[in-house]
Image (cartoon, rainbow, N blue to C red):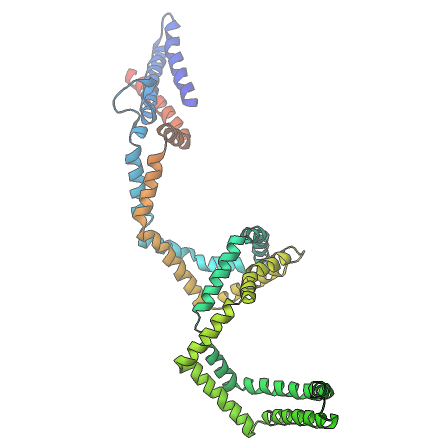
Length: 390
């Protein structure tokens, strides 16, 4: 706008000098300067316009350079990015100077950051969970869980679990608790057992005999439980030996594994178990949504605490920070490996631009500088014209 105004002023000044009837040297000097300025301004206008379009729409050769060179410009920009921004040395130097891992952890460790992130995640979770609540996904989860359970070789798992319980002494404590509970139950329900035995006995057997039989049964079971409760009793040692043998069979016996696997398959194929597996996903979603609908969701507090704990733990562990930095570098270096593909994307984007819109974008980006170039050309032309005349 200003450049065009200055060019118009030069033209007006040039023609205005002809209105002077007997021009003196200063008037002629001004005329020469205005003439040179107009020539310089027009030349720069033509040169700049020729970059982006055909001046005055005329099919002059070597004009509209930018639109016609769109593909070449795209390739040049892509090559420039590949060779100057995506080299291994440049990427590593910038990353190590930036210390992104330290910055991210420090940012996460600020007191107000974890609540903000946790609140943001919590706000987005209900919509995500509702999207996951559909029959097709429920059926998929049920089938996937069932298939995973069927693939699990359960016998070794049970064997290792029993072995851990027995070697840690936890099995003895659990067994003592169970025998104590059984003995207590027997004593509390002794009269009920006598009554049940009497009710189911033959009519011709005397009641006294029924009671003595019932007493013998209860006393025998109670005595067995008492022996089992004693750590050094023969019965307890036999029980331990049986558990040890079972652990060995679960870990090493193909026959026992086959039996356990068959039992597992029968259990998993039961309709009640299938329904229970299918309800796991639905119940988990319902529980999560119910919590998220509360004024102070436990989920948000859990996420917040997890973020705090993670940030503090990483800050206190230089090795963890180094691993994060190394991970960021590794991810960034994948860009270096694929820099040719990134360059191709840049070239494709530029190639896909409309010629007119591309010219307009570039012209708008550097428009003010182009105005100053035209103004400078006008002023330089005026100065040269005046000097030559003088």
